[in-house]
Image (cartoon, rainbow, N blue to C red; front, side, top):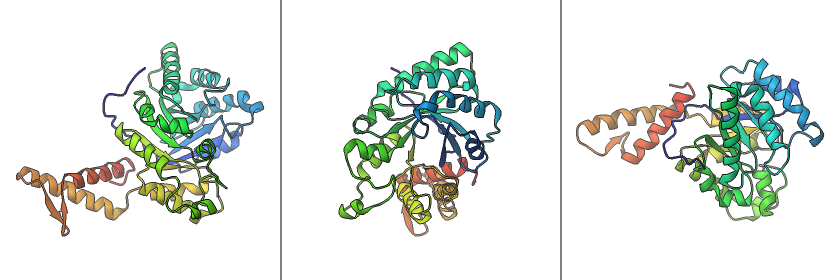
Length: 313
């Protein structure tokens, strides 16, 4: 099994992932024309079993024929516990892998799941002579996936992102949830944030191995305030971005997961002043009346880098 041993320098902008069903090409066209940072064409939950095999052709057509601009190009295969998964990889990658950025793998339970996908990708890329290397995004949405999240996070050089799947996770651990991603009466009963453990576990595992981390979907497409709150909670917990299941959610997502101008200005000042202090042999400085040390510098550099990738500086 390939194990990640070095720091991955992330240059991909992924605040919003708009996911769309592979069975409907017109919706795919609209998604690719949207303002989302990434579009994921889904072969899994949003596609009926009777349509899954035929829908692979839509993924290939979209990758080969549509103008994606700067968007990340993704598709989600079916779970590795189904007989659809290996054909999802072979048929799509062989036909359009040279136009693809990432493969999303649902219900990743163990590092070996990533290894299976990694091995097939390596073989297909070698066979087809592709010059690009396709990355992997792993959805953590089961009890077993959460238990193994650290091992999953370090399982492959191809792995770029961990994604929280709230609906399937709730079902896996038998926690009641009225609507995916939304707060309900059960959240009011619990004296705290019911999903804090799983969300923070995903964030910390991702950061430990230099991966992106994305929050999952919010089902209430007619509840923009609820969605905005969900974005803010995810951002406060350290996530890089969030799934969108409707184009109306994209603008709020991109805004929440972009550094505010005041934060960018603070970060640039900290980086500049701290570099001057280091040159003078000082280890801590004061900026706007507050002490700034090495930890503050690391936070500032993170903000500047996010702003740079988003084109804000």
